[in-house]
Amino acid sequence: MSSISPLARPFPELPDIGGVQLRVAEAGYKYSGRADLTYVELDEDTAVAGLFTNNVCCSPEVELGREQIKAGKARALIVNAGNANAFTGHRGREAVEAIMAQVAGHLGCEPGEVFVSSTGVIGEALPQDKAKAGLEAVFHAERCSWEEAARSISTTDTFPKGATASAIVDGKTVHLSAIIKGSGMVAPDMATMLGYIFTDAAIAPEFLQQLLAAANEKSFGCITVDGDTSTSDTVLTFATGRAGNASLSSFNDPGADAFAAALDDICLQLAQLVVRDGEGAQKFVEIRVTGATDDDSARNIGLSVANSPLVKTAIAGEDANWGRVVMAVGKAGEPADRDRLAISFGNTRVAEKGLAVEGYDEAPVAEHLKGNEIRIAIDIGLGDGRAKVWGCDLTHGYIEINADYRS
Image 1: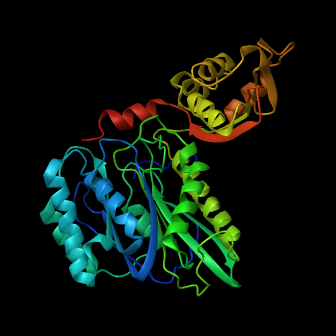
Image 2: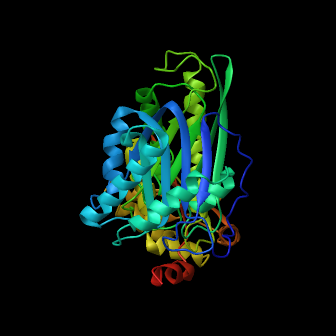
């Protein structure tokens, strides 16, 4: 990993999840001297839900995952780091199918119960010889920690990312532990790079899918680093049922609301961690939009502002250039009225009713922008729609990382 982001958060203590075993090994896809293959073995009858990228040039891992998720069952997860295996034609698909078959043979399960993700360079087929040898090594590796697994799935990440949450369901405490990777090529409209959530709750896969989709709308669907949507974005949630609660199948079941809240919480934690590790980022930006015609409109306006290179570079330069925010609101393609618009930086209102605030003092805004936690509030003045989105600034560091990514 490169130098740690100034916005990094320490890796938390994550509880073990019954029915989940983690192992890592070195396959040598791109890196040397570090684990780049992660193997998660799951108990039989583990339920799974998932969301995948909407990028139409997606990887075979995503194509297969979309089909596999329909059955709602999982026995294993494989994550390869350093090679995205995307835009690789039949060779890429054959590599994934070979991995699925090898793991299925090891576990005695169906290949469709083995989920595979890959991340890294696009356009190079995953080398089957390295994958096969890596799997043989990882099958016999010692169990590892959550942090080791989080490091193994990373590419340009500067720190390992994990989160936890819990809930009381049917009188039982159920736990959720999760890891995620993501730093650049992040503007997901379903997930964020590669994220995996594990819980010991018993829950029907159809209901788990419903809850994950809802959690995504408030978390992964509200972040951006650079406006690009990856070919490989995936988020999967696995539920082993080892907590012993009566299985959840709808919001009518006791504890369903509590579990949904815990899933919402852990997804938001993960999403914000990705933004905090945005490539080259020095500032974490929260944009709160109110007064839009509806919530979707508010979200789209917020993302328009968060994705604007002019807004992002102004924040990087600590320049209180609120005119760029006005521009980004106006280009969002959503209903807005210049003469009703109000904008604040931190706790300071800087513009309203189509004008700069009379007597506006830029000093407190400049002081706010010197920090690394930036807040921008935008009131559209048209309705009750609201949303929060999260992004980061755009610095020379982003260019340096991506100018020679393949070298």
